[in-house]
Length: 401
Ligand SMILES: [Zn+2]
Image (cartoon, rainbow, N blue to C red; front, side, top):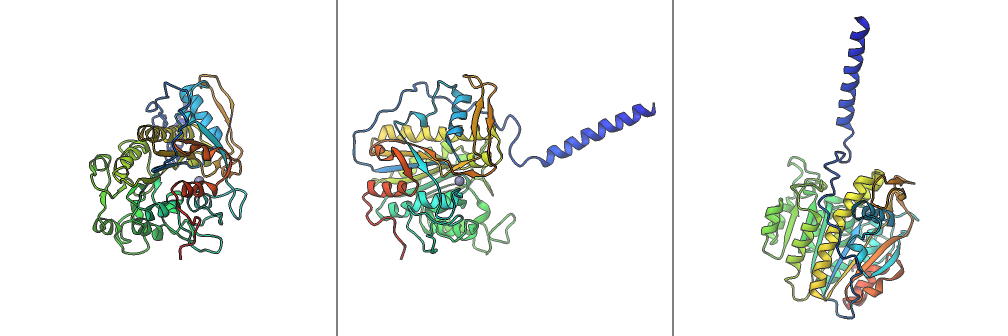
């Protein structure tokens, strides 16, 4: 009788411990529902999209899968479409490889990698579009705005996080998000969609991470922005400036938030009203975090969410004829590999060699006029330099006086 009681006590204690542990082990979404990939439709036609013979580029859509190496693409394709299938990005007719090291490190961080992709210069890890002497450099987004184009950023992290920040702000550290937030508005970026409301509300307001009492939401409204916080509000926007902050911090990439594809669609709707064209940067921000967590289901889901946004961009570009789409990554994360599995994507096993970024090359995919400029082995700083050449922007890269 006593033994039974002890046994029961042991079982109940173990169950309680498991419950407590499960409550504390929620750094990344874990439930199968969160890793559901049923939203994704593989392309029915897997033939490569045609090469464009046109020369004129009015619009550029630059898409960055943060931390997306070849293995992230492979695992997403095999899982969702089978080994013989293709993702939408894999239908883009021009491919290349991108070298990602920073000025100071063989293994870059997202800020230095982003600075290379935005401002065309190598810098130290952590820098937001400053050179190694901490001088601010013009970004391709700012240069595009200077020649009359509309500009936009759509991401699944906080809009003040490293990758969006490098395109429209300058700071010695990626952690200066309180200083980065107002610069995004001063730069008059037409479309700002993502998370990070905590850096736009005054310090005294609950949940704020600002260092001061500035209310950037009312400042944005005064400057002519429509400020929205839900998908429905976003879809009703009719003006030329929108700031959508859908979470206090990063997005959760589940309903009821707008998906990256939905944000991309709305961004294109707004930006394409400018007859002079636009520059849009779209980032699948969380592929990187899945790599840091060595979590293949998370990596696959985020890569597919990113590819869904690529599909939206490719549809737009196919209709417009004068839009260049370039898809790449800032670096690889996790040293990921696919080492086992069936041709239809069951029983896949993965190898990870790091909890951090790695130094390997990442893929580049391009579609549209001038896409052929993105073939071969490319250094990351060459990407915005090519964009500048395409947009006939002289004097790039360039210090901001
Ligand atoms: Zn990154």
